[in-house]
Image (cartoon, rainbow, N blue to C red; front, side, top):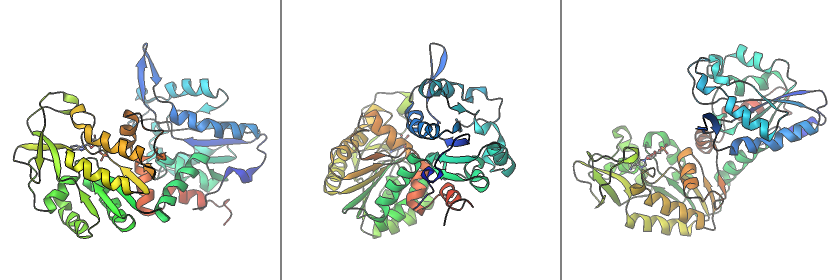
Length: 379
Ligand code: AMP
C-alpha cells in the first residue's frame, strides 16, 4: 500500500505542520506528580519532529489521552505528556487532549477544520487510532496536504507484508478473553495461515463446538456454530488440557492461592479454566518450532495472575526463541511480551491492537484511506 510521504514536501521553511500522534501512554503518580512511566511512543515520534524542524517547519503535535467524558475530567489533561515531551523535544508544542472536545470522537467536520486551521501540512503518525473515524484522523487530509509518518508507514508495511506474502509455514496464534472480538480475524487467518493455534479464554467456545463440557469457563454461545465450521477446516489447533480452579475461588488481581488442577478434554461443573496445560504447551511449542512466520494476538491464560501466566510465558519464550519472522499484535500480547522482557527478541511488536487487527482482517483502515484520498495526494 503506497501512502503519501513527507519526503515530497521538500523545504518547510516558515510552514506550520500539525502531527497527529498517539501519546496515549501509561502514567502514574511519582513523588506526588503524574508522570509518564513508559515513554516509548513519545520517543518514537521524536525523529519525525526533528526531520520536520530541520526542514524549517514549526511543529505542533496533538493526541488523545484516555477516555475523558468532558474537558472537566482534568485527570486526562496531557500535562504529564507535555512534561516528558518538553524534556525530549522542547521545540514541539502539544495541544490539549483531543477527546476533551466531543467533536473528536463524533468525527465532527467543524472540529476537524478548527484543529487544522492555521496549519499548512498534516502528518498522521498515530497508527493505533487510524482505524477510528475520529475528526483528527479524517478531516485534516481533506483540507491540507497530508502524509503518513514514518512509524505508521513502517507498521502498515510490516503487517501487510506478512499478510500478502508470508514465508511458510505461517502460524497464527490467538488467545485472550473474547472470541467475538477476534472471530473475523480468525476466519481470515484460517484462509491465509497454515495453522491457527487457539488458547486463552476464547478456546472454550471451540471446546463447546466439539461437544466438550467447560464448567464455568468463558463461552460465547452465539459463536459456537462458527467455531465448529472453523474446526472443519482442519487448520485450527485448540488447547486440549487446561489448568482450572473452582469457579468460586478468588483469582487474578483479587488474589487467592489455591493450586490449580489440570483438566483434560472436559472441565467439571463449577470449575473454570484459566490457563493452558502442559500437554497443550508442548503441542503449541511444536507448531511454533516449525513456523517461518508467526502472528500472535492474545494471551493463553489469565497471565496477570502468576499461577496462570505459565502458558503465556512458555508460548512467549517459544515465539521469541524462534528464527521465524514474529509479529506480536494487540495490547495484551504486547504487555505479556514486555512483562517477560522479550520485546527485543521478536521481529515486531505492533503498537495498535485494534488497528493492527483491523488492518490484517480487512487490508485497510479508514485513516489510511483518508491519506490516500486527500486531494493533494498524487494518484
Ligand atoms: P484480549 O483483550 O481479548 O486479548 O483479552 C485479554 C484478557 O484475556 C487478559 O486480561 C486475560 O486475563 C484474559 N484471559 C485469557 N485467558 C483467559 C481465560 N482462560 N479465562 C478468562 N480470561 C482469560
